Length: 324
Image 1 (tube, rainbow, N blue to C red):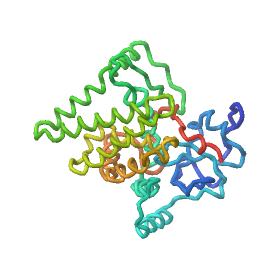
Image 2 (cartoon, rainbow, N blue to C red):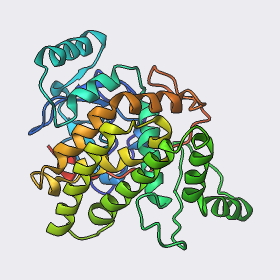
Image 3 (cartoon, helix red, strand yellow):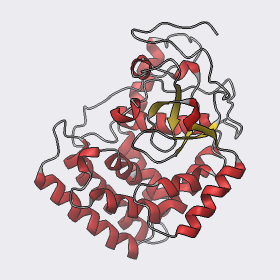
């Protein structure tokens, strides 16, 4: 493949002994070895390319983080079944609580999720932002569209298609709330209660810590800590389900909080988020399987079918992971 110029760098001519889609274990300075994928050429944005400090480094796409990084080839190893089983056995033997989420990532990636499947998950998270799931839901006029692009050029959408897509997006959040009530409210009011409370928790956390463009205030962190404490007690008594996660997306909010380095050490917010996500890990995995079992079109071998489209402007939130 010919090199493609960007402002400061070039697309890598090759990946050494690796191929796009390979599952790997990547080590960067200051971080433990982390599961990742080798990304496709066409998924490397200019922002990622400009962070490349040496032509000898190869790109990696960190699993369950959605961040890109550049590593020396000697620090990247194929995460085959033998190495993965070795890591899983070490985790089981250790038995310690892992606030970083690394242990859960090893367990999750062992299910066989492919590069394209994971990339679509990250793209869905980005689409949730663009569609207002992490924005102020009190504003009925707020509407953002998701920019979609495939590796190969595709035709522009017609005005009629754009208008239809825009009209379908209005009120989508409220529709999902009502649908979940309709599907699960007939048996008892328990699911309704858990869902509504989950929406309340999500709103408080995103309002104080995610929506704000400035650094979260001390008061916002204190309120978030109080809310997370309430969540831990609430979900001990009330079971979280796939439908509640799918509808409220509360787990995605917790993941976003973990990506905020400014919250490290603040009122044990990261620790509380990690604890909840670990408790919900089986349900999150069930949601993931359910999602990929309903026509995602991706396979487990790192390749993808031609009918898959991807959101190209995936954010890389941890700048330090873009440099070594």
